Structures are given as structure tokens and as C-alpha cells.
Length: 430
Ligand SMILES: *Cc1c(COP(=O)(O)O)cnc(C)c1O
Image 1 (cartoon, rainbow, N blue to C red):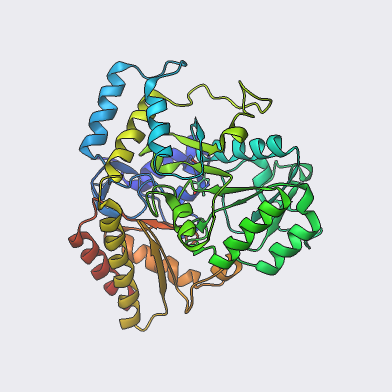
Image 2 (image 1 turned 45 degrees about the vertical axis):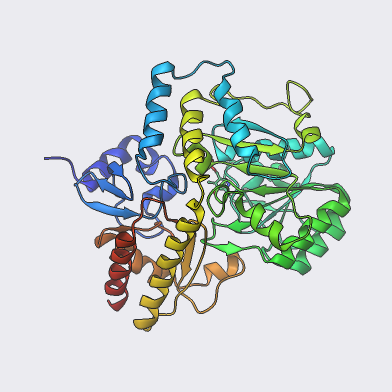
């Protein structure tokens, strides 16, 4: 007999803090026992007990083609046979970077790293190095990985800088980080008028997937771009989640359609660009990127950066998703899921709203889409948790916290979406 999820969890907790290697996997927000995954295929994951789930997490975003896509597996297997890591440059790194540059505007060069955290941390250092300034703005509810300077929440006023959100981060390390409310234009104006000339950068998730799904409004983004330009602060778009997920050109391409001259100064990618292997990147205009070592004074490095297996995986993934019609089909599938969930809730007399873009979606138990983190926190958490467990029981694996976005892959069939909506109807009735 295979060990059960709870036996595996108990065992794991003896040797790994909380039994997990990334906190949200522990199900602390929703309660219950995390499922230990044995294998995955297409739109499905199978746990240690052999139970099948329709997977709407997709490893938190990377698995845009579903699990075990044949072209990706083939590329990875061929790369593995050629060697796991060289610590020397390879042609494939250039190919991957060119693949990314080919669909993203305003960026001349990229550097590859191994995680979104590393990419965001390096982007921050680059922005500070390139501008010679120290202060930064981030927004409440946006996550940019766990670099010290970004683990911060708002201070008591706009004149004061943030407080650490993690033990082990000295107050001095976040003393240059100003935290503003997402989508709050008045605060944005005030933040710039107080600190504009000292700002190295503003970092933002253009569609915030770390507070479920909250879009930056077009007027907010437009003004943010204008203020950054006016004060010489660099605009960092953290597209670790949205890049190659909400559209081929990322969220940047969506805002560029609505705002004249919209562009990022630095972009950060991760998740989809690695196709499920550890790979991330940050990029900017040539003059900014040339500040990096070995050309410039901003130090940045990585033993496994541009790993040959990870780059093969990412490259194979990106070549699939740039095929004509890929995003149209993915977006339609995702839209039908969100519409189905909202209709099921409405039929059950439950207040729910949903949103999506490309292959990323969110839903909230409330009457109107939240515009900032405080509004997300005010949605019905008990209802979310009950819904999460009812869906899990019915074989639908949603993100185990109401602060997380969901993801649809090209492997999700219309039958999978219909089965999910049926499960939602039954769960919501209960
Ligand atoms: C996931 C994520 C990160 C961190 O990436 P890791 O690979 O987990 O370090 C950073 N920014 C955003 C927007 C993310 O969604």
C-alpha cells in the first residue's frame, strides 16, 4: 500500500519545516492536508493515493501547455543527454533570450537567472545602480519574491517608509521602500511629490496575481508611467506571473494598446519562460543592462544561471505558445471557465465575481471586483475555504488561498471546464 497524503505530510514535517519547501503548499490558509503529488499529465495531477485532480495551479503558472507536453519532454530529454550544467555559455541561452526579445517591445537585452525572486532582486539592484538613487516604491498586495527590501508593508504615512513583513529583515533594510495602495492615484501623486527625485524605481505587478486577480487601472498605469518619466525613476514591470501568460507580449502589450507610449524600463520574467524548470530573467534597454557585470559596476551572477536543461524546457515551451491562435484559444477556454463559475454561483444565490486575461483568472466571493489588497482581504474567506475543499473533494485543484490567481493550460479541454463548472454547481449548492 502506498502511504497516504497525511502519512507523507507527517513524515515530511519531521524533516522539513512545515513539511513543505514553499509555505503556501502547506494549506495553512484553507486548513486540511496538502496533497502529495505523485505525477501529472496534461490538465491532471494525481496524488499519492491515486486520486485525480483537474489542475488549476499549473505549478503556480509555468505549466501553460499542461503537464508533460511531448515537445517539451522531448527537448528536455535531449538536453539532459547532452549534459546537466556547464558553467560556461551555450548557444541555447542566446536562442531563448532572442525568443523572448522577439515578442516583447522596448527591451534590448536580458539576463537569465534561476528564480523570480532572484530576477526581481537583481532588477532592483540594477535600477539603483543605474540611477544612483536608493528609494523605491512598491504596492501593497504585490509580491516580487522574497528579497529583503521587498518584504515590507506600508508604514503609518506617506512620509514614512515601510515595516518588514518577515522576521530577519532589519528595519534599516526596508527604510528606502515606500509602500503605496494599489490603484490609488492620490497616494501615487503624493508619494512622487514627496520622494520623486530620490526614487530609483517603482516596481509593480501590472495585473496583480498575488492578491488573486487585480488589474492596475489604465489611468493608474498611465499616470505611473508619466511620473516615472518626469522624475527619472525606472518603471519595473514584474511580469513573472503575467509574462507569456496573459498574452504573448505579457501585460505590457495589453497596457500599450490602451496607453500611448506605454513601456517598462525594466521587465522581470519567470514562471512560463522556464516551462516548469527553474528559470527567470530580467531585461531593459541596452544602456541600462550594460551597467551589469562584467561590463558595468552592478554585480550579479549565478552558478546555474541559463542552465542548459532549463533553457531547453523554456525554449520548447515558448515555441509552442507563439504558434498562431494559441492565446486566442487559451483565453476563450479561460473565459468559459470564469463565466461558468460566476453563473453557477449566481444560480446558487452566492455572490461571486470573476476576472481573467489570457490563461490567468481569479474569482472572489463578493459583489464587485476588488481594486486593492484591503478589498481582497474583505472578501468572504470562510466561503472561499469551504468552496476550495468542496472542489478538491470533487477532484478540482484550485489555489489553496484566496490571495492566489488560477491558471488554465492549453491541455484543459472543454470537457474539463464543463466538469469543473459542474463541480462548482454542486459545491456552491452545498
Ligand atoms: C512567483 C512570483 C515571483 C517570485 O518568483 P519565484 O520563482 O517564486 O522566486 C515574483 N514576482 C511575481 C509577480 C511572482 O508571481
